[in-house]
Image (tube, rainbow, N blue to C red; front, top):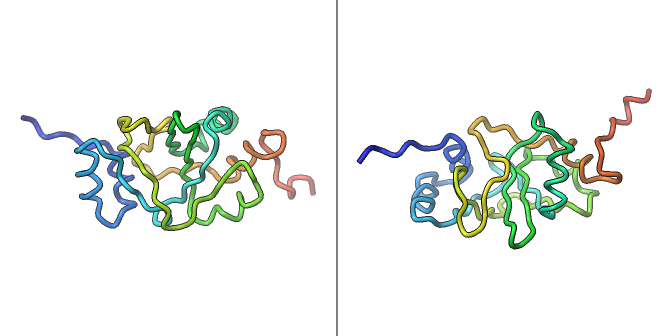
Length: 150
């Protein structure tokens, strides 16, 4: 039997855990892995349908991984650590705290109804929190920074 090639996105996801080998073992057994936020990214929880619309507004250049769980109408956006301040005032988004566990499948497949609508690619690119906030903010469109008017 030929050795299984690992997906770069899954490799990157596993690095967010203290024991990446254990994460791969769980995925090999078709289990969701518990990935802690705060090391490589923070998870921002949102409504699935609003997330799909926001993905279109943000566009592919500033879009990072987005995990979805359709039966619960939920999505989790991976954003850079420190993004809490930019997203704190948006009631439609919940920034999960450092250490919060994201129940995740590997990048390349669905497990227990969860899968990556925007797959991690291994590059470490995350969703731009300013673009995410603008897409979920009043009017749902991108806003120019206040300094753009001076």
